[in-house]
Each structure stands twice: as structure tokens, then as C-alpha cells.
Image (tube, rainbow, N blue to C red; front, side, top):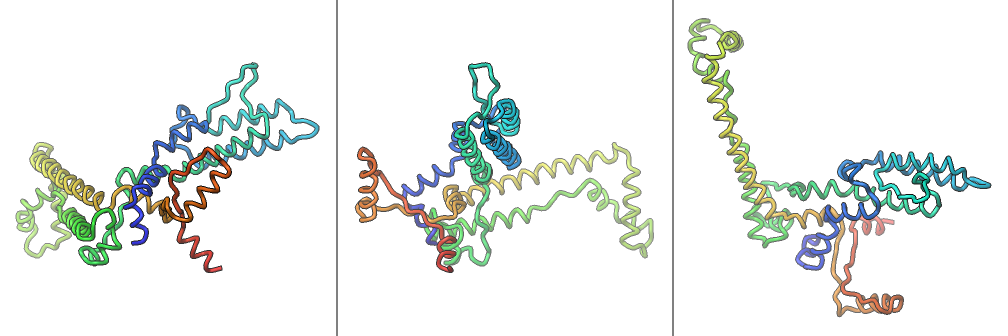
Length: 317
């Protein structure tokens, strides 16, 4: 309950949406040199980053060589780095191949890899949330009750509205489970011919014998004889799939209304955000500190960030 309240604050809501913007992450990665023409950002893996860091470590070792690094080895190691990591290769006007030629550039490349690592770890999760994933699961025992309204997927709407949405979601889930699969061509045929098979085998025939004989007869049917059953199955399967898709769409809409994207993003951040009022003593102290360092700067807003898990760990020491 404490974690859902801050989203009513437009400042916190805007900050969460900004922090959790996959498109902004992609733009930032390109500003740091990621080459999406060589590799889509969605395909960036830990292996790329691990290999890149290994090559940078080797380049740093070579640059620290005494009495001086060997230019040929630096170029060879740099070529391996640029092959391992999809980054834009620096243009050189002196005819030399692109290379990482200074310790400062090594540090800059390491910082870029750290940034890419953050994106690789976070962006796929944000894309899944944007695609409709990450909704809270609703227990039938809490839907419609006080606990479901306050502690479940409620947050964006009032308790009564949230309870109604939760009940709708459970209803849609029940409807999905209740949609019966269409009978296969074989079972349609078998139901029509079961009595004839039992008559052929005699009243003492068991289920296994009846099923076995039915399979034998079905396999002996011609394509023309099977066609009516297969046609009915395709039509029934199309109606079945369409009905389930319509229910899924309604459930997705109810889930999004009960547990909107910004709320799921906020949960993923796993922290509490709270704006600091402009008239508070804390705001005044921080504003004075900032302006003492940067006289022309102006503090527009402040947000307090806390992580309950870290607070619990600290209190346990």
C-alpha cells in the first residue's frame, strides 16, 4: 500500500515513465557508441560485454608496458575488441586502423560497457512490461474484499473500482478455462460409429478393444470419407480460437486498467520515490548547497529515493 501511493504524484509518475522508457535507453546506448546497424540492441548479450571487457583489460596491460607499448599489438588487440563489441569504430584520418590508444580511452570504453550492461539487464524486462506482462496475479480469495482492493492490483483507481476490475479478471480467466476445445475429426467420427463398433465386437468388449478397433477403422477411411469431419473441425477450431482471443483481449484490458504500465514499472524499480516539497527545510538546504557550487543553477524539483530491502539490511547490522 505504501509503495502505490507515490504514483498519485505527477512528478513521481513522470520520473518513473522517464526512467523506464526503452526507446530512451536505446537512444542513450547509441550516444555512448553502440552500433545498432551491426547488432540490434535486443540481441546484445553478456557474452559481448564480457569479451569486450577482456580485450580492454589486455589493451590496458599493453598500454602500460615499459618502456613503451607496441603499436602493432595495440592495434591487434583493438581490432579484437571492435569485433567482439558492436560499437562504432572511430574514424582515423592518418590511415591507421581504429584502435584504443590511451588509458583514458580504455576508461571511457569501460564506462560505455557498464552502461550497455545496465541496458542489457533492464531493457528486455521493460519491453515485456510494455507488451502487457508483469501484471499482479489475483487470488480468488482476495478479489472483491478489502485486502484485494488495497493490497492487490489496486492503485490507479479507487478500492471499489479496483475490486470490480479484479472480479472481472477472475471471471475472464474462468471463461477461458471454460471454453471447450473442438472435437478432433477422429472423435467426431468415433462418436457417430461407437455403437456400430460395440455391436461388431459384442457386448463384452472393453474400452481398450473398442478404441483399438475404432483406430483401425479410422485409418482405413479414405480422404474423401474423412473430409467432412476435418471440415467441421476446422470451422469449430476457428470459432474456438476467436472466442478465446476475444476473452483474452477483454482480460488484458481489465488487467491494464487494474494494474497499469507505470505501476508495473514502479514495482520493477523496487524502490520508494517521494517528492520533496519546495517549501520544506530539506529542499531549502539542498537548493542552497547546489547554488553554492553552481551559482547559476536552479533546483526545479527533488525526489527522495529509498530501497526498503537496503533499509532492512542496514537495520539488521
